[in-house]
Length: 289
Image (tube, rainbow, N blue to C red; front, side):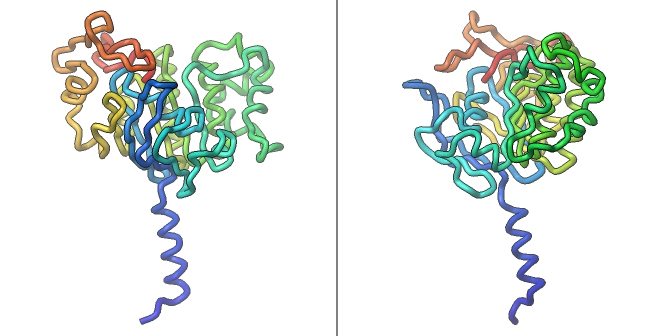
């Protein structure tokens, strides 16, 4: 029996919905002669949250930089919404719905909050209001005329995260957005990420608070020395074993991981050692991947 028009439309919508918003296929990349990523492959479904975890120096930040176009792979391909963007410039990838929130705030400290938010609106959305960012972080609305450099660290991070609300992305890459923040601010940041994910935006999260990342994630990609050691649901992971085997932290005994001086791994690009456990027992990655 021939499919009717409605069947054809349904099949087409199904194909679109099943197409990953982001896919890495056999990606190898690094810096100069130093190879950091080796044959990395994984995909991110629309509206899902992927926690990208691994020891310090395992290639997490390099993965985000490669996806965003800052680092060019020597092999493999990067796809956004099914389109190959491996050789596309970073701004072309942004036009296709990719948004990177880098480690280290990434704001213009000498400009006001209002001007920072306006700068975060991409050229193809010029004229769009900044209300979405202010709704997500009301404190920004109270400081629109304040110079960004005079904000607290948490407020600066909220300002940096405003880009994820103003660029109208399909996938957001977040690199250590809780770094250096007080626990109360971290709670607020993660609340905003849950709200963002609830709108259907896919997230790829590199995060020092591993337990928080696992609670947020639909998928975990675990990197070990630049290769994918695990890719799947967090429900299939034993968290204590994860910390002990891959991150060097024995959560059950509350032990801290060895520092770089004690033999912790560092990657070819200059990782600074293995992660440590906080006093509360929540595993935290201390330096970029």
